[in-house]
Image (cartoon, rainbow, N blue to C red):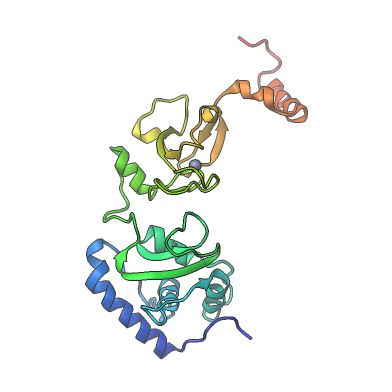
Length: 243
Ligand SMILES: [Zn+2]
């Protein structure tokens, strides 16, 4: 028995059309794009399907688990393992789909659950022309990250993801602490992720550690790792004395 509600092609089209009406009226002017329902091959588009599934019974929508959504999509795309569409349609594409877990204080959803909140307003913090190429000022940079810490995802002004008693403040953080704090070297990080001891690391634009910035931190490494590093350096510098 499938754990999702089956909807036939005609029902899918009807729900899609009603979403489209709301979109025309409220969301288009906010810069939100309406996904297609069919692709060029006449197959359903996943974004369209996910929206339709979440919008069933609108405005009285229900909570939908990621598992349920995945099973629904599998009826059309049997090889799908992990349906990310609901999350992307939300924070990134501007549809107000609440996702359970992180900083979700509006709807009290559990992690792994989604709920279409409204078709009359965009996702909070979503702005027109969301994708920007030049990052000239701090507001624009934060907007690009949806006002979240690049590293831990905590949202500005809301409860911190790891420390619920702390309100998240975003700070201009270095990607590479050895380079100047210019726009190109800035990622937004919360006050927890941007602590001074993090100057040890170089981050990429997704807030992931990619390099060591402070060589003295090698002293904190385990003996086994130190030995391996030493071997690499010994080979590279051919055992020459350091200058
Ligand atoms: Zn953080």
